[in-house]
Amino acid sequence: MDIVGIDRDGATEYRGVRFARAQRLAAPVDVLGWEPALDATAFGPQAPQVGGVLESLLGATGLAMSEDCHFLNIFTPNADDRARPVLVFIHGGAFVTGTAAMPWYDGAPLAAGHDLVVVTINYRLGALGFLGDRNLGTLDQISALRWIQRHIADFGGDPANVTIFGESAGGSAVVSLLAAPEADDLFHRVWAMSPSLRQLRSAETAADFERVYLEMVGLAATVDDLAGVSVDDLLDAQQRVPMDPLMRGFSPAVGAPVFAGDILHTAIADSRPVVVGTNRDEMLLFTAFDQSRMSWDETDVEREFAARFGPDATTAIARYREFRPEANASQLVSAAQTDEVFRRPAQQLAEARSSAGSATWMYQFDQRSTAFGGVLGCCHGLDLPFAFGTLSARGVDLFTGLGDDRQNVAEQFSSALAAFARCGDPGWPCFDIDRRATQRIGPVPDVVDDPESTIRSLWS
Image 1 (cartoon, helix red, strand yellow):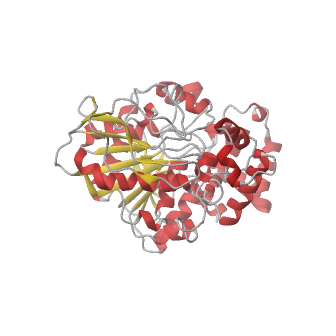
Image 2 (cartoon, rainbow, N blue to C red):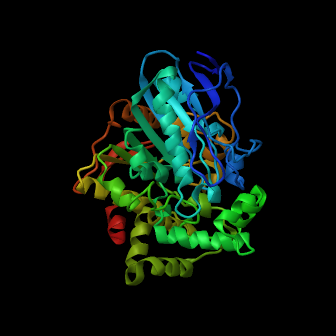
Image 3 (cartoon, one colour):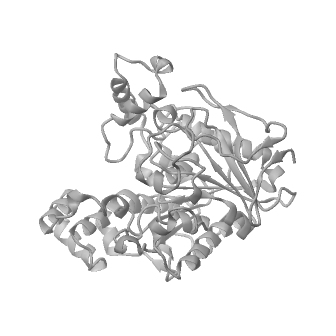
């Protein structure tokens, strides 16, 4: 094949393969094939962004940034005619940070260990990708999926068996693609890890944030004016948009032709199989080291629970303490926030899809970090190196801690993901609103019916 990759242990990696080009705030233009004798041994630039501590931990520092960021990476056991299942990963980062090139997203272990083709993709972020209802980042994802349909057979993959998966914002992105008509024939299954479903926006919310963003750019700016603004100034304005609790400043939004109707309602009715899951302690990633919460006591617990449960706050506190008896005040509130932001929206998606007759499975990731004395619990993002089998990647030990059970849990997760990609069944019972079967992935793997049901009922 007229392309040069990197030989890995049981796989070949092709980095920085271009799938599209795009002008600023314009739809992507698909690229066909690749340049003759392409040297695919270096990652393409990541989308412009202002990275943070997490991006540094994930190994994203040092990567070039450019608006010309339409590149994907392919990991394959062999570029032959085997027609292997294809896994396409869409990275997270609240739709404002991230890149497909992070070491934790290395697809070689999955590809080699489970005889799959793995693809990771870039897409435009922040205002350049999701200003108003333009959904340019979503269009980038669709363009990448079209490239995969046209060319993945050349890399040993089966274009008729494509599963998309993503984590956090990437998790909500893969759910949103169920609602995008242009993507209807481009993939066949979805696996959503800790999806930030509350980031998905109405047209009205998107329009409100577009007005705020243009105010931050200044000088009575219009969208047309953005063509002449430097990338640094665009990012600076983006940073000054007031923080929204649901992080809806820049994310997929209802807006034709990409999303003609409500995104979640359309995804619920889609018949393609979906696996959706969350981590037990998602919000501890954001709260464990929050100095403002270190001195919280019962008064703070009562205030936070009253804001969420009103007259049922006392009952809610008792139920959460039943399942988290060792939690301090901040950790108890964090447990409620985990359910509020991640678990209940995921459960509601599964409930609605089950009622609509759409095949859906649920899981809960239960592996806890031993790092920093265990304060991270099973936090947001902890599942990534287990799903990819990248426990030896940079920064993983610092995040997960050490432990003899880690490799077994990674094999659980990656095997379920591979089974779903291969045949559309992760290996446990489908979710339905009567049994509510939920697979626990962790040191004690089992199927639990309606886990923590008394807490779930509080949010109903």
